[in-house]
Amino acid sequence: MSVFAAVDLGASSGRVMTADSATLELREAHRFPNRPVRVAGTLHWDILGLYRAVLDGLRAARPVDGIGVDSWAVDYGLLDALGSLVGNPVHYRDERTAGAVQPPGLYAETGCQFLPINTIFQLGAEHRPASRLLLIPDLITYWLTGASGTELTNASTTGLLDPRTRDWSAKAFLLIGREPGLFAPLRRPGDLAGHLLPSASKETGYSAPVYTVGSHDTASAVAAVPAADENFAYISSGTWSLVGVELPEPILTPEAEAANFTNELGVDGQIRFLRNVMGLWLLEECRREWTVGLDALLAEAATLPRRSVVDATDPRFLPPGDMTARIAHACRETDQPEPETPAEFTRCVLDSLAEAYRSAIEDAARLSGRRVDVVHIVGGGARNTLLCQLTADACELPVIAGPIEATALGNILVQARAAGAIRGDLRELVRRTQPLRHFA
Ligand code: ADP
Ligand code: LRH
Image (cartoon, rainbow, N blue to C red; front, side):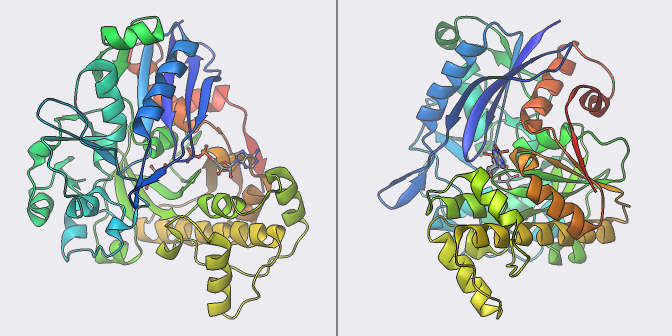
């Protein structure tokens, strides 16, 4: 039996989770908030604070036989020729990409849905000189091991990768006047990234191998969806909701582009054909304006009728701040009653999410020809009973909720497989070991 540690950095919180290969029972070694910092007008990630918390978490997790790092997508750190960080990573919600437009022909090449947050648009607004770019989980892995690489599932969110060849798109790089050599060489989930550097071992109290995992958190989460066959849709529900189906090949048609679907890579080369929905960000941003607790809010929202629904994919909801005002404005614009109380806003957000899930799942099925018999909800949103039920009602499909920490589990499963500690169908292992809830 071996024990593995997943470093999972979400946009709202980070955690270090462990599980042994025999039971796959997840334990939380450390959880910490991830709070962005605005400095001189630009929104940044506090990357050194996060790295400090990762080291603390790994120390609390000890001893482990392997470590893997995943995080939210698209963002990066820049390094100079000596390998030192050039400034703090900028947060994808910073306004610097607000004016981004999708160049014609790009979708047919990269299959990335147009989102201003995509790395390709961030690089268009990037003025800091650098020798090397490392995506966030690759940056943490670099600090832990000294080895640099670009993990493939996360590379597929940059808008610079061709999902057919699973290699960089020369055309996309040409468009932004950059060279693929800015990125470290590509590596795949299951590759050994390296071993803890002596300086890192001193902090953790042990040495261990660091494996490359599905370093895009959504790739790890979807790897741990407990689906029994291919006829399922997934909702990876956290700060964002990522809603779609899993396919063997990308769909790069004008119809898929018009429907704003992305083709991201899975841990075993699958395509995650999905749409980004704003997710529980909408609720959490509203909650920053209130003092009432989440349980009380959800209990009251469950007693209310469905009244107003906003477009939960609308980029107007991307930046932080004034969320209730923006939601009320969107209701006003569409001649719907404006929510007034916190519970009414909560209900409006959850109905809007359920409606966006229904629409994304219907579009994914239509565009791919894939039949969907069941919807799997994984991530923190799987704890939200009201949202799970509203989703089952809107989609008119059974919903299976869990695992809640699917990302950490997917991260650990890929490490454990690479280390030879587990074998066989990863999803079957999830079905056998994890608590799940059913909604109809
Ligand atoms: P991320 O990885 O993007 O930071 P998570 O998967 O951790 O996100 O999910 C966080 C979300 O889970 C929160 O935004 C919150 O709305 C939801 N959540 C967490 N705990 C609960 C709970 N007890 N009941 C309902 N929802 C919850
Ligand atoms: C979810 C996620 C999502 C990306 C977004 C930037 O955490 O990785 O898949 O689109 O963050």
